[in-house]
Figure 1 (tube, rainbow, N blue to C red):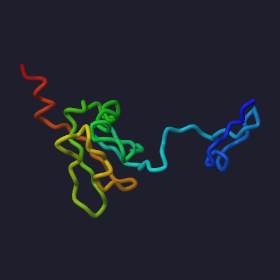
Figure 2 (tube, rainbow, N blue to C red; figure 1 turned 60 degrees about the vertical axis):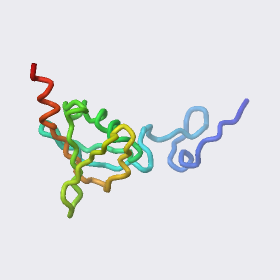
Figure 3 (spheres, helix red, strand yellow; figure 1 turned 180 degrees about the horizontal axis):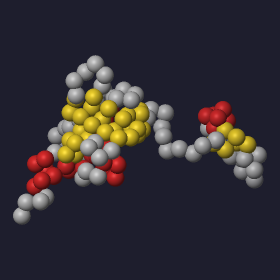
Figure 4 (cartoon, helix red, strand yellow; figure 1 turned 135 degrees about the vertical axis):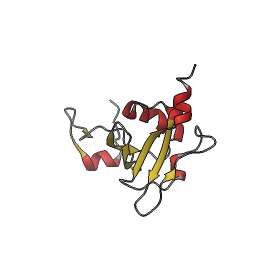
Length: 124
């Protein structure tokens, strides 16, 4: 029978499983570097954990179900206490990671509709 080697973190924060091995006390897809942000839009407000290695494009795709705003119509503004709102944008949003921006715990990420892109879908 092969032995299973578990990461040290599971040994420190785990609980005994039926097989005698330690299992994680809670399952999560969070990483140690995730940053909690307050996501606000006209329709919603909630706390979400953001991974700094995500690209702007990945974040916008994840925000669509939360805000109801399609990624191409989203305008993101990061509001850090003591600073003016900073647009979260880049020429290449599919390759620009969020760690290029001053993310700090519980900062506000405001998601608004970029009128031109959003309204252009309604013009025939």
